[in-house]
Image (cartoon, rainbow, N blue to C red):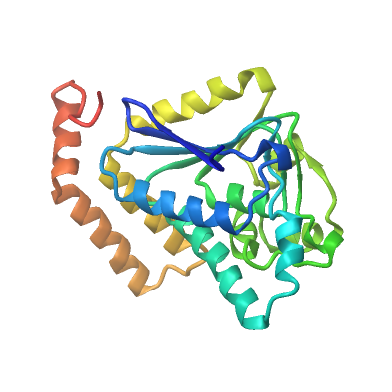
Length: 260
């Protein structure tokens, strides 16, 4: 059984499913490598418009497989660093994926699973899901996922959750900004599909540039360099083919050519 399932529908929506339900979709070095390669491949596929990440079975992801962690404990410092860099690379590819990403959080998300959610642009969770940054319970630290979690929930909340490893509900996850919506389990697919529909109405090139801006502008002061960067992005979009088509379509009361 493959540890990763990928399905791309006719609209260009790629559904990537972590497929290790017997261990609550915990990831090891093999799954990390497979997901990293899939992200690289899907990023280069012009037919892909949106990526939805979810888990098979009852859980989203329990984070790192502790059997894998125990094996790595016997490796050298250099081997452990190289292995951790593999996880870091995968997380960065997800965070910087050049198309909209949605975390469909169907169940529990712990440790690295919370990191995956933080790397996605939009997170929709089942109200029955539970979350925990649980590393310290095992004498570990949320190192690789740390930058993305802090960006998602802020340093003050992160300082608490990183140390307490407490479990929080879907509603609490929404309150602190880890997820954008918490909905009844029966409504999860409809909530995700609603967001997918919104995303498919946008221009793919404009979305890629807008996403990059959101990442780069986080916590930056509006200095001369930022003013120049953002003005250039707006000017490039106005003069680009997608911007000209979108403006013309609105004025002509028709759909732009990227909407199917």
